[in-house]
Length: 271
Length: 162
Image (cartoon, rainbow over all chains, first blue to last red; front, top):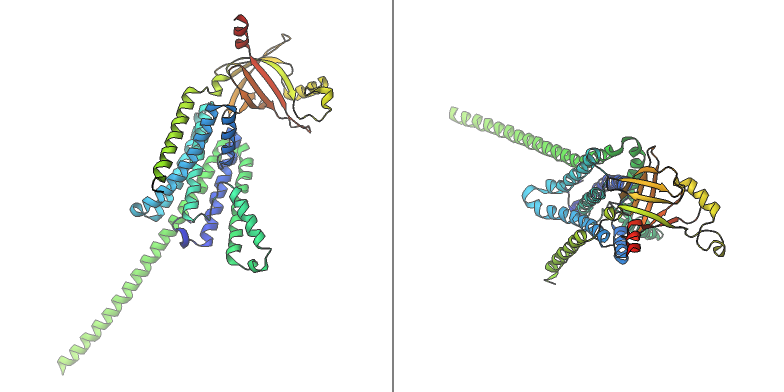
């Protein structure tokens, strides 16, 4: 899911990454609406709200909204920054995993703060909403960056448009068997489905487990990291095993050849 | 084209500085709301009745019906205290209510909490030093939403003195 980049990614990689991250984004968005009355996975609405607050002359609120937008922006900026610069120093897998790790830290901070320290003041609300927007920016930046903009999981505006376009393509017979169009529809509809599913599950879960829901989101994000870690370890293990087997085979081959050579030299000396 | 990056980074820095200034100089909704507010207008917007009959104001029986659903039963003085305490004082000198208030979102949602898990949510449409306009959206089969306008009592007294 994480370790492959751009065109090296398969449809299956994008499908898994898209589904899991969309699920997490759906969960985060619904929790933030329940707890803070603010959307945190999409910022289109915030732009409209910013314009509205400016028009009303509410400078304080306008500043808060623009700071939220900037935090989402910085999230995406940080993701891509780590990916393009970290690749050389810490390897592809780790540089792709760091944005998810940062996202988990942000969500944990929000979850722990809500459970132990939240006094429901406006400043706290504004700060925590900002932190969630930063986390969503990190996630969206990561998925978009490593998938060549094929996977964007925190908002559904562009996705709905793309899905509509892809489905309208299907009205032409020529495109119905087009593998690319089919894969795109599968990817977009799975992102949409898992985003909504995450939201619905959170809506139901929040009534019983409340802020522990944040830990569930962290669990799903950890799956993304561990899945690739597991895959890498298995690959390394298989590679090592294959390498040692080959070496053994080569050594035994050499031994046989040496023995044969020795036999020949022995025979020669006898003669 | 070569100057795009410095320009973009400078723009972000300028926006951040403007935001910082607005946050330092501007009034937080949480500070603005503290004080005594008197209800001066009660309006039902986009009402589905003859506008000539009610002229935007709600008929008495409709108002009573809505008040029953709103928990707050009569026009009152709302006094917001800094530590999230709110006192609702009815004009007829009946018993005052002490509840909790919270601002959510960017300060656009006012949440009133009564002791028995009852929560009322209002949308803060306007909040200045002397005026507060809030909307209450009903979960009823009705069109429109209730708009309540408040004037700050202290400001009025001060103006009257002058």
